[in-house]
Length: 332
Image 1: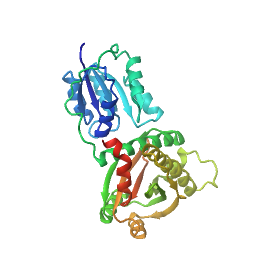
Image 2: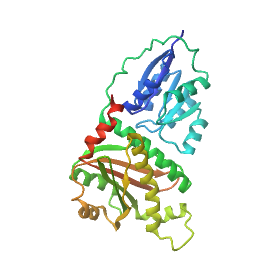
Image 3: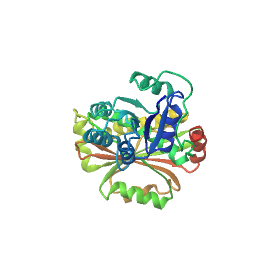
């Protein structure tokens, strides 16, 4: 029984571990792990990646760039993309770039097995294969497990925004940090880049987890967002439009997080936190509400447009213990 060289490429330790657990027990593979596209390409060039299970959103070199490099270098790797970016255009693009299949995160073992079987990559079922892999016992941190949960959530939200606006949404690698109020101040300053902003705030609570979602729009880009939304009526104000867009994006993110960790969030009504206000004013008005917080920073960009909006998910310090408990099964 010949052993197939397999590369599992994802910047998340948890995601790689989930993929390794899902590999069919009777599939004889030699596994190489890569934390970004650059490492994956190095492994493939060395002959270690006959089959590649590839994430899309990664630092240094993303999955799209890997697929492009494979094509330009004429390397014969059989690629299955496994990603939280579930935009229809993302799926179409990776298949056009040469990927054989696309699996949406989170996936289960039967989906992976069925895909491998359909592609003719599985040998006939037999005895459990002796898998050649050295690092499958890597511990998953809370930070990594939570960031991967966020990754899936922002991908779901991007897919909805892409449909609403008719554009391709460029997904970032989310930043996840526990911040003191002063550090949060700096993070918001970075997001604002001292431009005038309008921010929508929406509280959420459920199962001992609470926080606020903050969606920041740059005022100079609001007219362009209105064009994308094909606003027909003069009665449909900028604020109504931003509130509608916020409801879609924040709601999709929170719903996906809740589904993944098996909780139900009650969401407050979205509120205008500051209109045409500099970031400093937002901080001064709200610093008492943000002390130490688990902060998620996400900056969505719209391809072909000079538009981006920044989403901050701020979880209370008391929520961290409950989130850790909820994510424990993923970290084991």
